[in-house]
Amino acid sequence: MNPTAVALDALHSAAFHRGLGNPLLALPTHPTHHHEVEEYAAQTYTKANLVLVASGATTDELKPQIEEFWKDLPAGKALTSPASKFVGGETRIPHADALQVYAIGFPGSALYGPNASPEHVILAHFLGGVAPIKWSHGQSPLSKLTGSISSPDASGQVFATNISYSDAGIFTLFTSGSVDYVTKAASGAVKLLQDVAKGSQAIKPEDVKRAIASGRYATYAASEARLSGLEPIGQAILDTGNVVDLDTVVSSFDKVTPEKLKQVDPPQCI
Image (tube, rainbow, N blue to C red; front, top):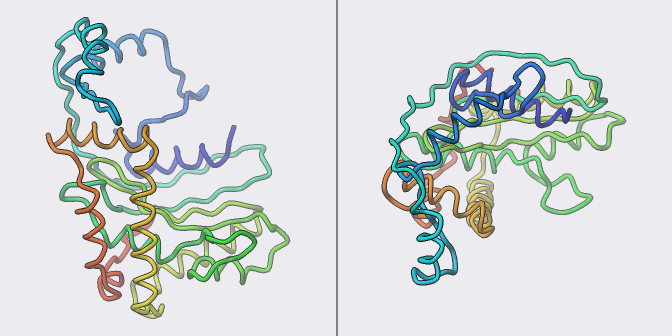
């Protein structure tokens, strides 16, 4: 049992309860039965719920595959689901692994639509935590926090990230390591986030510019891999009928200012 994967799954379950909170892992406490897989496939894999997205291929090249595989799909009915709702909660999972994980989150930015928030994305890059240079703590606030923690655990880490979905997102402070490290890192990370909201954490314009550059790079880099880049395109077409314009998403980052980052006041964290 991977503590990191279990923690992320539990974080979503606590945050959303249903929908995005449904378990992703088939654990003994949440078994997946054969008939459930069959029912899901029969309802989902239909023409009404599928979009064909390709990269580096022409329509003529795809036509034989469409005629061979697509024609046999049932028409089906478009699936609908209620909008994702952030509820919040707390969960603790005992395990035997030496690695301890603590994750805390609050409503973040969706991939697109009315719940998209460039401020949450840039705040995650401002707080940082993952050093861009090997063997260096880095210069972001969470990187400096890591360097200030006196702990024998050299492998511990703490970072901020915004996990985006089609209609919702979850802004996360994630820390892992020994019990001693996680205790100190989690406490320091939460205080840092609160200090940003209160204005007691200095946010220089040049720091925001670096965060925007980091967010721009990460957004474009995520679209380079064909599989990870094509999936959100298909999801956006199913949801809105339009393709996500990355240039529009990235240009919204440029409007983020230190004052706007301070206004991202986290509610009661989960």
